[in-house]
Image: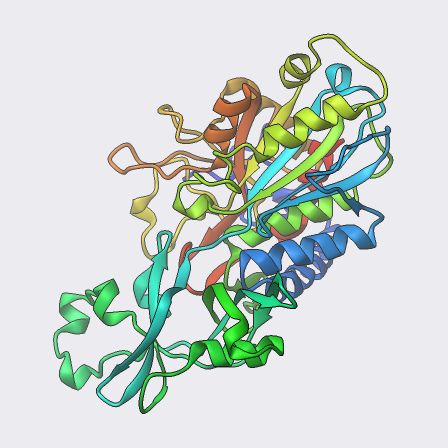
Length: 460
């Protein structure tokens, strides 16, 4: 495993494990850098705690954007865009696209785009969810995305999402968060499963991931939701609900070098992209865009996913809404644009280091990871990797690299989907983390700051 390159020290044959040397900074400078990382990570924790579902994540992003002078555009409205406008669009309540209009028409200045996703693997409540077994009230759930099943056992779980109801002849949509532990999936005692530690735990999603929510006959979920939104029970028409761990996000490690939280994949990227867009400074020639999609964890094939039309629709309407007119504007804009697909990356695990490809084993708090795959599971090529590497150097560090082992399958992201749909130059990138797709994950505090700084430069 090779360590990341030390800036300004190209001749050093033995890279030090000291972060000050890795980043070519003095002890005082590293102290300031760490403080910035901790501050950014604390803000990330607050962001995650306010975003138990994709719907809440979009609300939190929209709130932060509105506080920075962005205003919402309706998809059914006619748009007029002027250079410097700060706007955002929400589709389906769980996908948001925000932009700062460039000084130049997009046909000339192009787009600088950050893409990420608002969803995370979890357990979703089934439409007819109430169950009663062996004297317990239970809730039927469905696995969403690539859930690491065992990590959801023995957690204090709550329910959040959105509720659809009829009031005064109109259908309304309300966000709901019960905000307290109401469910738990109990493990089976070792006395009744003697071989679990030596033979492994095997869970059946239909049988073993059904949470307990009470005692007695079937619970009345609609009545519970009705109380949460202050409506009659019969007014509830439908819902989209997720289970989530009520334990708050926090900093950890002996020197607060880690973030312990749920949904780091991929709310950490959403937070970094949003913060970068807000802090990117005065408008530049290019139009800056942040696209945060739902449904990445289940393939992106939806009206609000990356395989849908949402980003193309927004970009095309921005091009058409500029006061000036340019011939063949959309195609020219795509040809002059760059997209970074920001999704968390696999840090090397100290107990499973052999699962990584040699020389491609990223470490936490060493900066962003450029992800590559010859079979296009990631969209990075030599040209986009070079552009991203330059951005990382401008932010004060050398990026890390990830390539999956040749004998393992490779995951994918919104990068290849968006690149294929738009014909836009794309790179896949992310901050390194452990416990990906667990109910609780971990990442590095310094990487939060480095992500924001790199993405801010990417939007310039």
